[in-house]
Length: 384
Image (tube, rainbow, N blue to C red; front, side, top):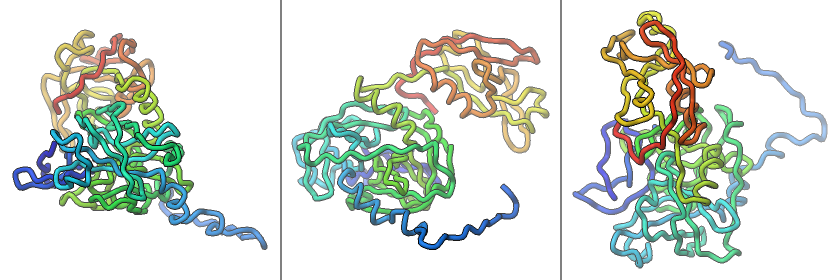
């Protein structure tokens, strides 16, 4: 279950493995206006409350949500009946939060990957056994069902990640390094980031935050100041493996889509096109003599794109220090909607299900054509 660290500036999944393997301790999985500001003064009317009087504090948010945030521990292989605290040197540990009043807990897929026995520990230290209901490596989400009395179940509310703005204050709560109920705060430092999922696909619309996130925070909630879950903490970007102020969370919009499907079926089917692509911006497109869009750099064998006879680049050319594939197809639209970035194409495909047919607008050798592609089912793993 333990894997060695990646090179400097790796993106690191933040589950914690305390086991020593080959002398290395690490994560379970190593995996990313105006020029002059204007201020408008707003007078406070006599008797009206100030922002500090109406906005909850971090302490107030914590008190409201703490009972719904848990530590998730996976028993070591071969010791599935062993309580987590009996063998702390060989456990995988992360965080999670109570999703509903049925005792279902959301965490990261990489926390419970291949787990047979899972334990969930509540803030007062009481531990209950749990079982994995479903996992999805493509979004790094998982759901476990906790065998705990109803009096212990305090579900958290999901917020709207699409309403977030850069600069919004957020709170991360989890069990970094096994230190349960640890609270860190920060802001949303960027939106619409991309993370690499455990199976090497891309998680779109990820939230970047400078709230301190470390090993063991995986699966814990990122909350807004209303105490609503707007993300699931998953990765950090760091040269040392410790927090460096750049953490990433899976957005709550993805949780709202994926978790109900995991509860119903235990797995999620994702649509699959079967290409590797490179975004071609306007500046490079002029130099290359192609329209802006996404250039196909690889057509994966036996995939939908191959069946539709899409063509990968046969050569390459460097423009402004970036290498672009040449001689192949450039995709400029999906079902009539323009495609300008790799995320545009991925989002368009993710909006479909396996078996759906999409129409790609493709430019090849200066000619524009419409290509219908029946989407397949995403494989469990893809080679980067």
